[in-house]
Length: 222
Ligand SMILES: [Zn+2]
Ligand SMILES: [Zn+2]
Image (cartoon, rainbow, N blue to C red; front, side, top):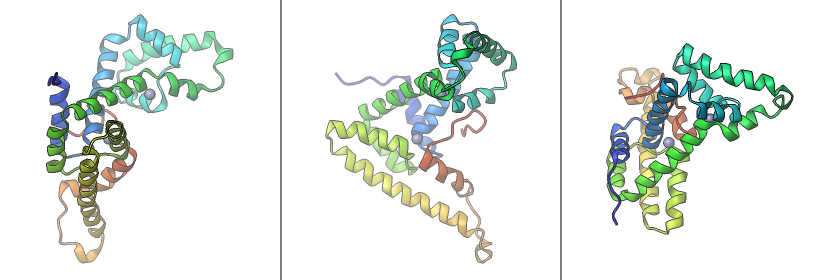
C-alpha cells in the first residue's frame, strides 16, 4: 500500500522549499521548539515527565540551553525544583558521570532522535518528490542528515543513493560560491559588489552544513 501524506509530509515539504538551511535541521528545530512549548505549557505538572527528568537528571547541555531560550521563569523553576530535590535526596550517587547520565537519558534527545527517524522515513517514502525539491532548492543537507539518509538508503540497495550524492555535491559547490563571495567582499578590490542576504550569513551556514544546525528558539529562521 502506498504511504499516505500526513501533516509531517507537508511540514517537511515546506522545509525543503525554504532554501535557508538543511531542510531536516529546519524541521527538527521547528519540532523541538514545539516540544519545549508543549512541555512548558502542559508538562510542568506531569508526573510522567517529572519521572523522566529525574531519571535523566534534567536535560543534556544542548537541550538545557534550548530550554533556557524560552525564558519561562515559572515553568522552568517548577520543573527544576523537582529535579534538584530528587538529586539532593540521592546525593551520594550523583557526583560523578552526571553528563553521561544526561546524555544517555535526556528526554529531548530521545524526542529529537525519533523526529530524525520519522522525517528520514517520510523523505524515503516520497523520495522522488523530495529529490525534485532538493535539486531545485539548491541547499545542501548537513553532513549528519546526509549520512542518515545515505545510511538508510544504502540498506535498501537503491540507485537513489547516487542521485542524492550528485545533487549534494552540486549544492555544496553552489554554496561554496556564496562563501567565496562573502570572503571576497572583505577585499577592497571587490568593495562595490553587493552581497545577497544569503551570502551575508554564509559563514553561519558553512558551520551548520558541517556540524548540523545549532538548534534554538532565538535563531529560528522562517
Ligand atoms: Zn541537517
Ligand atoms: Zn538532549
